[in-house]
Amino acid sequence: MLNGHEWAKRQAEKAGLDYEALDNGFKSCADPARLQRICRSLSAVKIDRFIRKWLARLPHPYCAADRRAGYRYDVSILQAEFSLTQVLDRPLSGRVFFEEVIRDNLDIGRPDQVSLIFDRRVIKRTPGRFRTRVITEGVVPSLHVDYKRSKIKQYHKEGQALRTETTINDARDFGVGKRLHNLPALKEIGFTANRRLLDVQRTSCDCHIGTEAFDGVCSPVVVESQRASALRFGDPRVQALLSVLVVFRLLPDGFSNRDLRTHLAPLLGLDPEHMTAGRMTYDLRRLRLHGIIERIPQTHRYHVTPFGLRVAMLFTRTYARVLRPGFSLALDPLAVDTPLRRQLERLDSVVDSFIAESGLAA
Image 1: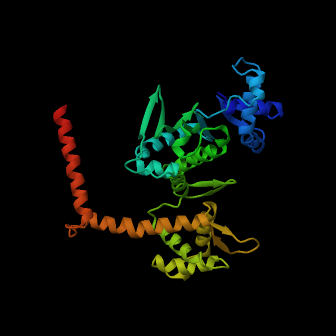
Image 2: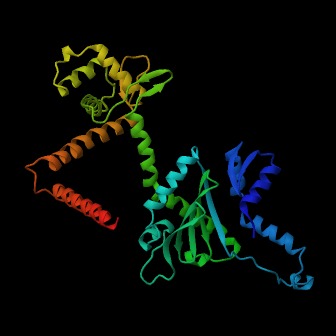
Image 3: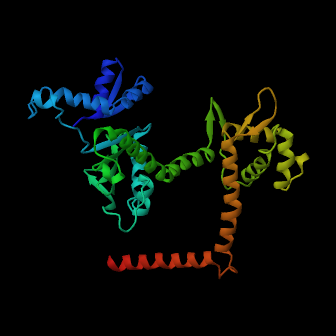
C-alpha cells in the first residue's frame, strides 16, 4: 500500500517546502501551487519504480534466470482512493454546513442520483448496491455513497476541513482495467466524482452563502470607519430604491444623484422637487457601502454592480411576486378557495392535531 499524502509530504520536505499537516493530509502550505504540482506528479511510473525497488530487496520465487526469460510480477490496482481536502476558514461554521449537507443529500445514493456523480448509466439490471449511509462515530458524522463496489465518503476532518474521498475497489465498475497503467483513467474518474458530488451539494452551500449575503444587506455595515444603515427587506423606500436600480443597470453611462431622485420620487408618491439632494446622497452612500453600486472614477455618477443587480432583482421580485400576493391570498377573508389558503388551513389542522396528540401522550 502506498499513501499518496505521506509520499507528497516526503517530497515537500526534500524540496524544502514548508507545510502544516492535517492528519494524513495538508492544512496549509507556503506555496500551494508547488505542492499541487508535487501531488500531481505521483504517476504510475513512480509507483512501479517504488514497487520494483522493494521487489529487488524482498524474497520472491523468480530467480535471475526467470527474470531474464521475462517472468516477473505485474502490478494491479486492488484499491485506489482519490481525496479532496477543503480547509475551512471558520471550522465551527463548517460543522454546521456539513450537517446541512447530510440532511439535504440523504437521497444522493439513489441510482438516478449516483449515476450523475459517477457519469455512469444505471438501469434496473445494473449489478451492485446503490445507497446512502450516515455513520456517526463518536460525534463526527460521515456521509457514505455506494456505487457497486466503490464508494464516496465525506466527513468533517479533524474539525477543520471538509474531506471528500472516492474509493474505487474494482476498476471494472467503470470499464477500466486493473493494471497499473490505468491509474490516470481512474484518477480522472475519482477526482471528477468528488467534484460532481460537491456540485450536487452546492445548494446546501448556497443556503449558507445566501444567509450571509442577506444578513449583510439587511444589517448595518462599517467600511473603513464609514458606517451605513441597513437596507431592510420590507422597507418601502429600500424596495423603491432597488426597483430603480434594476432600470439603471441598463444605462451605459451610469446614473447621478438627480437621476435617482427623478425616478425614485414617483415610486414613493412624492414630487421630485420635494426630495433633497442630501437625502439622495444618504441613500447613495448606503447603497455604495453595501456593495450595491460603485462610483465611476473621477465622476459624480454611479453604476450598479453585478452583486447589486442580483440583490435588487431578488428583493424586488420576491416582494412583489411572492410575499405581497401570498399575504393577500393567505389573509384576505374573501380568498377562501385558493390553493395556498387550502394548504395553509391543512397545515394549521395538522399542527393542531400534533399538539393534541402530544398532550394526550404526556
